Structure formats: structure tokens, C-alpha cells
Length: 194
Image (cartoon, rainbow, N blue to C red; front, top):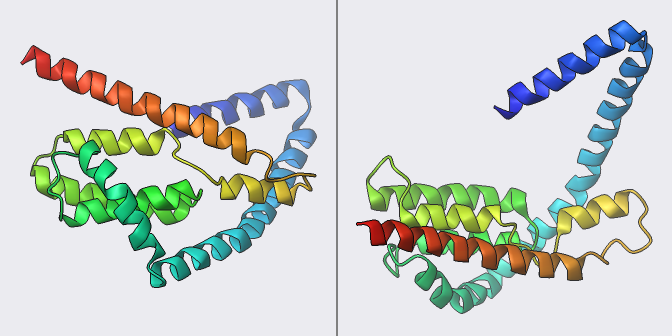
């Protein structure tokens, strides 16, 4: 659906430019934006490689396991459908840990593995309670250190690229709390109907 919306916006813009005689400006904007996007993507690689390296060091040093032990009681409460020692719990904890450090790219494969394990547990094509809760948590933007945003701010010469960390933590906390409350509300509402 989003691709259709983007395609419609591009077509409307090009047709509008054709009728107004501003195709030169459209071409210039297209090529400048494409060049800027490639430059930005390459510049982000360095910060992502750095944080992925930090995550690997933390994993080898056992720090991630320690964080996982800290979060495990909360995760078990949030996902009561999953057995305590099931691999899905490990993937969920790893995904949340990566998201906390703003490593969405590193978190995505872990999230997919967690979803596969949860689907295996439910044995159904319908999203289970745990899958919905996990999706709500991920969508709410669980982040403590917005690494990618800091990298973009550094790329554009921000005076203080890390000044958004405090507001990010507050916004993330409110979003995650709201997501969990809404998830629980609709779960208990569906349970009461039965």
C-alpha cells in the first residue's frame, strides 16, 4: 500500500511539473537527493559497524547475557504464553537489547527469529497474543540511545548530536508504556467477551 502511495505522489509531482514547465528543477532535485541519500547511507555504515562491534564485544564478554537475565523476569511476565526456557525468550531479549541501543538493523533479524519461534509455539497462521505484544513493543520505538539519529545529526554537523538522548528516553518510555497498556486492554477486552 505504501508503495502505491509513493508512486501516486511521484506521478502527481511529475505531471504537475510538466504542466508548469519545471521539469528541470524536478530532475535536479531527483539527482541531488539520490546523491545525498547514497552519501548518508555510506556515512551511517561507520556508526552501525561501530555499534555492532560493541554489541559483539558485549556478547562475548557476557554482558548481553547479564542484561538478558535482568530483563528475563519482565519478559516472562509480558509473554506468559511462551515457556520460560524457550529460545523465543532469548531472541526477544536480544531484540529488545539491540533496540534499546538504537540498532534497528541488528534487531530486525532477531525479531524475525523471535516471531518464527512464537509462530511455532502457537502452531497457527493467526497472530498469537505474544506475537501481538512483541509487535506492539517493537512498533512503540523502544530506544535508549538513538544511534542512527545521532549519526545523522553528526553527518549534518550538529553542534550537540547527542542532546536528543534525554527526550528520546522520555518519549520511548511513554510510547512503550502506552503500547503495553493498550495491548493489555484489548487482550482483556477480548477475553471478557468469551
